[in-house]
Amino acid sequence: MTSSVYDFSGVAPAAHGEESTWFEYCRDHRLMIQHCASCDQYQFPPRSICASCLAESPQWVEAAGTGIVFTYTNQYREPPGFKGQVPYTIAMIELEEGPRLMSRVVDAKHIKIGMPVEIRWATIAEGTDVPVFVPIGTDSL
Amino acid sequence: MSGEPILAIVGAAAPASQDTGTYTPAGLMAEASAAAIKQAGIEKSDIDGLFSASSFYYMPTLNLGEYLDITPRYSDSTTIGGCSFVAHLHHAAAAIAAGEMTIGLIAYGSTQRSIGSRFVKSMSEPLAYEVPYGPMWPIAGFALQAQRHMHEFGTTSEQLAEVAVATRGWAGLNPAAAMRDPITVEDVLNSPMICSPLHRLDCCLVTDGGGALIVTSPERARDLTDQPIYVLSGSEAHIARYVTGHPDFVTSPGAISGPAALDKAGVSLEDIDHVQIYDPFTIAVIIALEDLGFCAKGEGGAFVEDGKTRPGGSLPLNTDGGGLSNRHPGMLGMNLILEAVAQLRADAGDRQVADANVSLVHGLGGVYTATATAVLANKSFLK
Image (cartoon, rainbow over all chains, first blue to last red; front, side, top):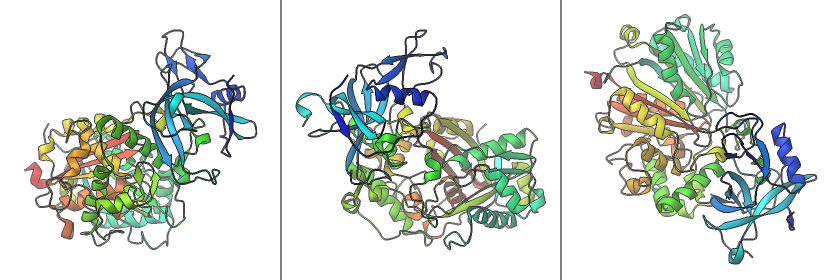
């Protein structure tokens, strides 16, 4: 279990099926990806099947929660529901296990591609926690 | 196979009322369709195939058919984003070759601006795993690709800006373009940052618009017009629905559809006189030029830097002023085709490219996760 919990006002998605499962794990502060026992591939977003070999019911596994910034953008316009938050950094995080996910990078002195990051959790709406990432070491605030 | 047309465009028109806010999207589609039908010299009852895509209508060919009172025997609402209409060209060719249709109408209408939907909400259909982070659709997805392109290849903001500057130069020659005053690289860099590294002037306009095309077999076209515009080939590809699924953020599916279309047409890039590339954001043009093979992967920034895509340059590109400066009604693919037809008919006024006989039309969809490419030519090229 990670310690820091950030608070942003944000938008909780309408989640269904495997999406709901993933967000339920998030409530317990577990970042889940999937692993296929048949072909040994990790995948994210979660799916009903392994997108590589079509094996059924890929296994939910907890990611280590570390990775790098694969790419990012500093967004200066606030979409509905994100009032007063801009600019903020949206990034694609490449997890240690391989898959990438969209997230936010927070508490960074600066941001650059390739920067190592680790997971924190943010509450964006009542009952909805989502992963965010902070730089590891000296790049952190 | 070189120069064997698969389809002919015998009517092509934009809706006359596209900037008046008078009509619904279906109204604009129908207005353009009526003009294209008249131009083609056919009867409405000759049309037996309908093609459309829309961010307003879930079943757009049904709207089109009802509004025009047409009952088609072939109907195709394939939606792969803004490039859908480019894909419809080779879909229509396949339907004609299979004997399923003889004359097709491809139409689009959008009131994106007049209804004030600047976020293109209907197109966003967001991914649950992206929603909590508030990425603005679609610009954030393109910004993520631009940033990665800069990181891998050293592409600069100045090089991105050159795309906007060159395109504005062409818009200056198009009396119908929305934004015609010249701009400089500095103007682009000084415009407000929206999603880094993309400034406001790296972004397309938000306008209403639409268009319609009448298409038929090259044989049938001979009876209808002295000036058919031929489609030599078409190809499409898609790699993901959401930017999260983008494989590398620097290579678009254009690297598949582009070379495939050129190969099927039997033409090389040296044969291309004029290029229309879907330009929602400046980065898209740089990536397209690489993926189409005009330069190596990563060299798109340096390729445009010398101004070769400006008016008078060696590669006339987005000669109507593109989505960046002419018009962008949400799905730009129709406008790409309309401008290629205008150039190939030598009907482009002050912006006419001399001896434009072959045009490469390259559209994108989604967050650059779909593309459709077509090669168009006039009779002079086929001789």
